[in-house]
Amino acid sequence: MTKTPLDFQRAAIENDIRKFELHKCSICNYPCGFIFKNNFQDVLYDHGCDCTRLSLHRITSWEEVASLYNMQSDEKYIKKTNEFWRFSDDKDFSMEEK
Image 1: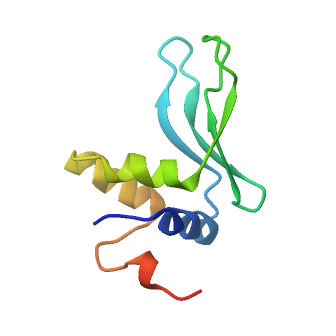
Image 2 (image 1 turned 30 degrees about the horizontal axis):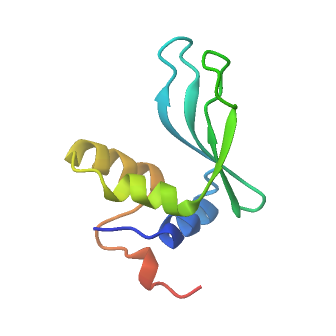
């Protein structure tokens, strides 16, 4: 099921999710991923370590979080991600009124 940026933002608020780890640095094993700040209004991508010459944080958006999820085809990854965000097949966050 396709998720919207609002689905992720609502799930982060409801479940107090402050970071979504995507991978670990292949050099130092630092957890890299999205960070949610300022009452879940701001989304940053945390490169996290000094192993690369990139800035440690890149400003991004809930749209990027949703886009990354929606382009996945690996059922194991989708299931693991749904469990992390506490999404279920029978609960469509985009249809809920807040």
